[in-house]
Image: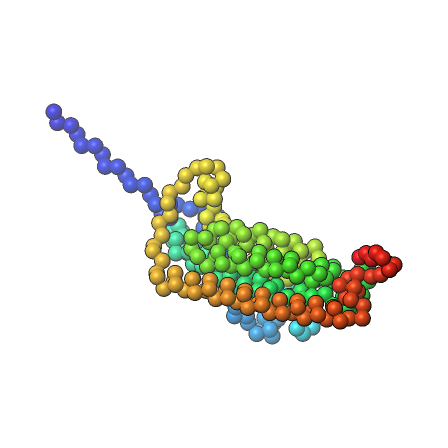
Length: 319
C-alpha cells in the first residue's frame, strides 16, 4: 500500500525571531540607551563630561522646559542630588527617549540576543564596581566612621536626619560590616555568569534598603542609588521567564548560550580573588582602627562618656 508522505514538520520559531510589539522593542531600546548613557556620563559616571559643559547643557534644558535658569553649582559638595544632577539626568532621559523612538521606527526587527547580552554586561559592570566600592568602605569604617566624643555630645534634637543615620551606623562596627557583606556579596555573585540572577536578586534587596535610607533620612545619593536598584531590577527582568517558572513550578526551554571563553572565566575568578583580598585588607584596617579607638576609650578621663554612657549615680549606671 502506498501512502502519501507526511508533511514536513515546521520547526519552532526561535524566541528571538518571533515578532515583538513596538512598545516592547521601544522599552528595550530606550532602556538600553538610557542606562548606558547614565553610567557612562551621568551622575558618578565612568566618563563624566566636564562640569562647565554639563552645566551649560542642563541650564539650556531648564530654560527651555521650565523658563528658569539652573542654579549655579556651589562647588564640590559631595551631593549627588543637586539641581544640576537632576537636570542632567532629565537631559539623558530625553535624549534616550528620542534615540529609542528613532531606533524603534528604523529597525522593526526583533532585537538580537546580542543587545540584551550587552545590556546585561554593562549593568553587571556598573553594579559590581559600585557595590564593591561602597561595600569595601564599610569594612574599614571609611563611610560612617566610629563614634567620637563630639558626636556623642551632640544633642539629639540638633541632629540632622543624615547625621542621625551616620551616628546610628557609627555606633555599631559590627553592623557596618554586615552592611558591607550585603554589598560585596552580590558583587561577587555578579562576577560569574551562572550566579548573575542570584546576584541581581541580592543586589535588589540590598539597594532597596539603601534607597529607603537615602530617601527617608535625606541622604543626598537618592538619584544614584535609585539607578543602582533599577539596574538590579532590569537584570532580573531579563531573566523574568525563568524566574516566573521558578515561582509557578512551570518549565522554560534551556537558554542557548555560547560557551564562555576561558579567558573570561579566568578573569572572573581573578576578580573574585582580588575582591576577597581587598575585603580582607579593609577588614584588617578596620580592626586596627577599632583597636585604637578602644585604647583611646580606656585612657580617657571619662571612659563611659566616650562609649555613649553617662553617670546617673555611682551604682549602677545606665545609658
